[in-house]
Image (cartoon, helix red, strand yellow):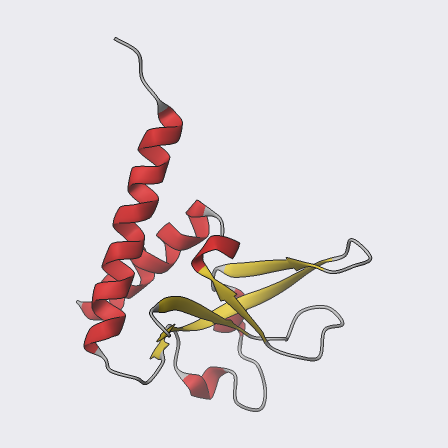
Amino acid sequence: MSKNFVTEANNVRLEALTYIREVVSKHGDNPYELIDPSTYDGEIENEVYELPRGVYVDKFGYHNEYPLINVSIIKNVLTFGGLACIGEVDDDMTFNDDELDTDVICTIANKIFNLEK
C-alpha cells in the first residue's frame, strides 16, 4: 500500500481552513483578532513578531513579511490581515488562504483553537 503525503497535507490544510471558517463565521462581520489590537496600535510589541506571517514577493523579488493579526470572511473568502511592521514596507497587506502556506494556515488554526479555549 502506498502513502501519499501530498494528499495528507492537503487534507490537514482543508481541515484547518474549515475550522478557521467555522470559528470566524460565529463572530459575525468583525475581524477575528489573533492578538490584542493594543499590541500593534502605536508601538509594536514583541508578541506581534511571534505571529505567523504572510509573505509577499514584490516585483523586484524582495520577500516582504507581514505578521498576520486577524481573519475575516469577505464575500465568502477567508481573508488574513497582515501588518506592515517588518522591513521597509509601509502598507498593510491582505492575504487569502491560497496565498498562505499550509504550515501558516495550520499555525493560525492552532492559535484560534487556543484562543477559543
